[in-house]
Amino acid sequence: MANKKTVRKVKKKNTQLRLVKSGEVKTEKRKGGQEEKIRFGKTRRTLILSAVMLFLLTVLISGYVYIVRNYTVTTVYVEGNVHYTNEEIMEMVMGGRYGNNSLLLSLKYQDKGITDIPFIQTMDVAIEAKDTIRITVYEKALAGYVSYLGRYVYFDKDGIVVETSTEKTAGIPQVTGLKFDHVILHEPLPVEKPEIFDEVLNITQQLSKYSMSADRIYFDSGYQVTLMFGEARVAMGDSRYIDEKIMKLQYILPDLAGKKGTLDMREYNEDTKTYSFEQE
Image 1 (cartoon, rainbow, N blue to C red):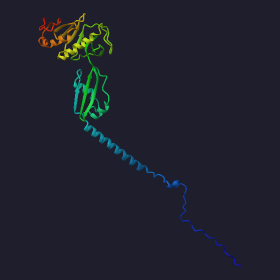
Image 2 (image 1 turned 90 degrees about the horizontal axis):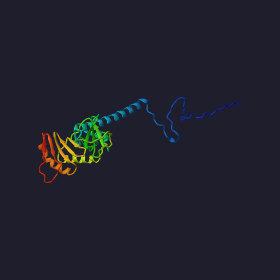
Image 3 (image 1 turned 90 degrees about the vertical axis):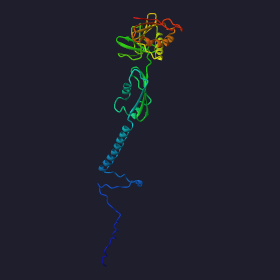
């Protein structure tokens, strides 16, 4: 019997089979069919980031140029100031870098005024147009000032010390004859008759009403009032009829210009047409 050769059936090679060797990196599908994120190369990421930064920088520069060109202040209105000039007020509000830019000023002073300035209660800044702002000054109500230890001490209608300064303020009269031994800022002047400050304020207001301004208001020991206008003195007496006396004084004062002496207005009568003037 002839030997029969054993013939083994060789399975056909699977063409779909592939070998993954160690160290090789392939993009595989995650479970559920979600593909892994494609990772950019370092150079490509740098280029994208640079493009984004360049775009943002361009936007910022364009915005800066637009704001500078279109919001520069060319017109300023200042109102309410007496103690400071318009130029001084503008420097306080618009001083510093970009102080002439209305947009930045609106952000800086939005819903708040400017305080902590001598003689000024507050200042409001309003932006009326891209190139126009209005500064409204609210000064402290000063009734007068006294001289103390080489400084001018300003007080309000209640006699409270508002400010001290080495400079005089135009339109604010000096008050003399009052007795006090110390001065404390934001506290009343320690005088014997505190109600005298109401009289000082009334005199100042009445003079201002008729466009007059006394250089000094003097009170003697009996609180009799004398007003000083240069070399001319006007004896007003006590506080009775002070408003009426000042109303008549407006017609007499021009004749006292350049004269030295005392006008006696202590006695008041509606029918009095003239008052005696004792020239020196």
